[in-house]
Amino acid sequence: MAEIQLKNVRKTFGKVVAVHEITLTIRDGEFLVLLGPSGCGKTTTLRCIAGLEVVDRGRILIGGRDVTHLPPSRRGIAMVFQSYAVFPHMNVFENIAFGLRVRKFPPSEIRKRVQEAAELLQIGELLQRYPAQLSGGQRQRVAVARAIVMRPEVLLMDEPLSNLDALLRLHMRAELKRLHREIRSTTVYVTHDQVEALSLGDRVAVMREGRIVQCDTPEKVYTEPQDVFVGSFIGSPPMNFLQGTVVAADASLFVEAAGVRLPPPEMFEGVLRDRVGDPILLGIRPENIEVHKEPRSDALPGQVVVVEPIGFQKLLTVQVHGATLKVTAEADKAVSPGEQVWLRVDPRKIRVMDPQTGGALSPREKGL
Image (cartoon, rainbow, N blue to C red; front, side, top):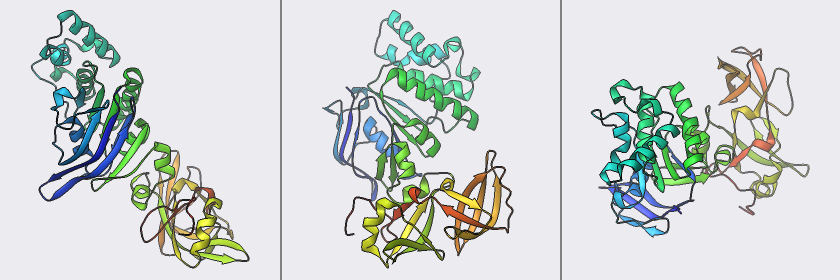
């Protein structure tokens, strides 16, 4: 069992607090992604788990064993770095076998394990080549093979695909997902790339300024962001935010935005009834907005500013009463810059936020 537990872990560098009292449990066999912008503390958190950084406070447990003060070699981990970190004077076989030889495994066991790892990473025919004869993707596979050949309980990856081109990254993402299904090591993966995070992770922990602001499944992190930061960081294009006011009329509840009264999601009616007259923030994904060319009473009037064809879709920038919204439309949708359109929002897909705190309201809350 290789469950990882972080209990109130804190790490500082001088006066800079890189990790703020993080408490997190990573389940045995789980693929957890630490996602966030540069400088948010995700790599420092990974290095604390690895033992490459000494924590100032808190505890780290792997498989129920307190490893807080143990060196990396005694934690049962393997790590893959952003740089390929392969030895240029060794061929692929020797690179993969390096850790096993250091630990004095028998030659027959070394050959067996190296061959298994090479076949798993589909580099079996490259074992006699040297790194200079390999592509970037092949060198990265060698680095991963060298990690998994040790059969670690925990596999830590620090932006391993960031040096690859877009097409190769796409291929390697699929390879890493397949690999995890086969080896089932508890994996912690650091990235600033949200596509990697959402496609790879069983769960995604979004970090900001040394704190985990949301940790959930990729679907929930995308559809139910816990605050404005998560909604604006996740998604390309990111979530739109529209200012509105809660109003009551004829026993019905609405959110008045851009001169239009929009029905709120049913699950939020109980919360919003206690906020009548208050400002509110509506989080709306671009794909949850319908574009109409004829006036509609339930739609926001706007003017198209920019049209960007992006293959199977068009990305529209629409000006709505001083607010700028990003909207996705079908590729064959006939729309031009300067044109008047009406945007209908799917009320079931609206995320309701508090404009003061930036936090998402919960439909279970009462009397906020």
